[in-house]
Image (cartoon, rainbow, N blue to C red):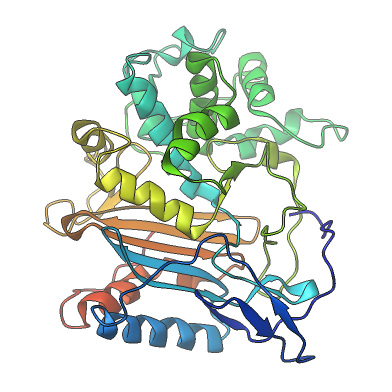
Length: 392
């Protein structure tokens, strides 16, 4: 976020570890008590999940005390939330603590949501996956790239954050998806690979998909997400970078490891590959709707969870989802993110409808060590070997 522009009373809070059901606290600096009113307070079956709660709380408390984690955690099985807790600061300059209403930039976890938006249009019969992008976006200069190539990161296109800068004057303070496309049309940056040759992760793919969502639906990307995804699922605290108010009560600031607030830059105006802001609870609502097939049909989700890059042996990519354990009953689909001080992790284990959400507004790499969470849920002897996931 930009250097803090929030209009927030200078209020000090009590503890650096905020329980998910805590409604008021007093800061260690002053002892003043100030009410906090989370958007949602989740009920957790502390008897049924007693062992898991103990192990998870031990894990995250240890990480927090070691200065290795600042953020929100939500772990669920099906509709049951096993564990939900906040650790540390939302805005450190004003000692504003995180709670379960805190809103985070999802970074590349936004690709999951863009992928879902594309598949909604596919289910509505408005979009075919093998349609060429040039048949949707006028003047798009790469003739053999399809929607499927974009979804699976097999387009071979270069990353816009690498090629756009040289074509932007100092007067351009914010790049948009449309401007990115204009640069591609005018300058035609060289593709890294031929379409379909192999996997090549590129943010350009999902920025183009956001434009395709707009073109096919005749709605702005932010409007489509609100009307077709967020509102139907009750994700009432989800936004994009294009329509979020930076003075909103529950917004957080992204930080470096030394708590330097990370400012926005000219690439924040491009959405689809990043740019979705939400709470851990809203992301849980999305996960639950997917498990229950309320949003996308089972067959459509299977398309998203299919590995499309056979050259990748250890992991793979579907439509907006990375995946591990492809040949195992414990198949895991996930995405991680990293942008402007935010590190995020959204993992789902399909066999038992497990949801793991870890959102940090500080550059803590511990966010990606989800094997520790599986150890805590399953017990150390049951979870198997450690696996580190990609940063995004």
